[in-house]
Image (cartoon, rainbow, N blue to C red):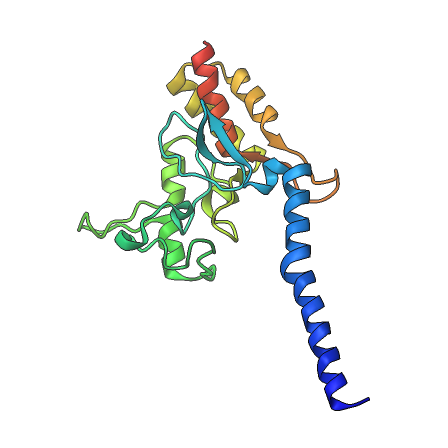
Length: 213
């Protein structure tokens, strides 16, 4: 085989592979996603009154006593403005954990707090904050997730907050327990992972409950 034929064959192979991987395969997957799983393919977006309020895949910050609290995050659930990030919550990027070791002073201060005569240097830890709200600390209410965007907490963490939310909203505790059950995602295929509560969906259901009552 001459060198010219080898070059032509290599060129044709490259062209075919380029068409397959750069056009045919991506557009085929796009077509499958938009026809078979359009909701998931478009980001699992949650809408209320024709307005996008979030995604089932990304958590949100809830600090009011009227809502169930999410697990802590090192990135503010990517809601910070990169141009005005004075708190430095986007130092790890839009997704990612702090990667602090269990013995790291910064992590211990964030969890247990730091007492200091100077109010600006005083840190209210996650555990004291939870205890002050009458919530039994659980691991997922103290530690961030690997992505720092996880919208889920354990059913135990959600149930630990029932008394606080019920008191503030004046809603029966058993009604809130029912909402938690309704918004608990089971194990994938029934065997993988653990049951988890989607806090975003739970709080949206909580607001809808108020509007009905």
